[in-house]
Length: 254
Image (cartoon, rainbow, N blue to C red; front, side):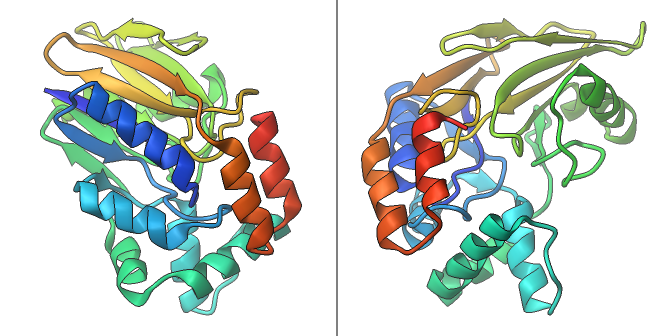
């Protein structure tokens, strides 16, 4: 079985379409999303609708939780630009799409094969930026979640692709840099965590949309970096009256 795993769409329809086209081209059996379908971009309704049409299995990210917090009269822990985009999203979303987003789980075990988290397995709002952060995250995966699905997980939240492995016997964490087309073998006896990056606002220095292709038969994970119509996504952000900085950062990959 082959999975396409992606994260942090952030209402970027052009980036999402590029990822879904690649998933179809690769003949995957299922689509998995690690959260933050909305936020930042100009197409929340179109993105939620498209994700729902594909039957992708999804979890909540912090932007979905932010919508819930607004409904509860709470102030989400977000910077002013993110908050402006969250209020735009809340006003733009149709009721059905909004209720669907709020119904999503915060984590998901997929067919006893892997887990989906938005941030760290230890805390959905915690970022995993490096091997130090990954050490705590992978220990939580290994010791707080039941096997067999806990040998492998996918996360997002940082918007940067990454690959980590944890040798539970020796309590050591390995980290490897990730580029487009890189493939990693998943070996027995270790725990793995792969960050799928972002198909809507990649922050690794490239104006791309990213995803992972997980082959559960061959037991490998491949990273795909995809070009998409960044200019169209930027123009929509500006036309919607969202902060111009959100358009600029798409072109910079930051």
